[in-house]
Image: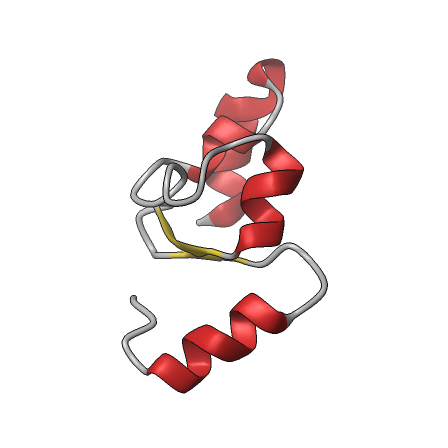
Length: 68
C-alpha cells in the first residue's frame, strides 16, 4: 500500500487530523504530518514501522490479533 498519487498524498496531508495507513502486515505505509507530531516522531520516522509501536507496551501483544 502506498500513496503514489500526488493528489491523494496532498489530500491526506491537508486533513486536520492525524492519519495513518497501515498495510496488511501491520506496517505503517503512510503517516501525515499531524500523525508524526501527535506521536512525537520526526517526519518519515513512522514509515515501515510496526503500528504496535504506537500501542502501549502492555497492550501490544493483544493488539496484533485485533488488527488481523
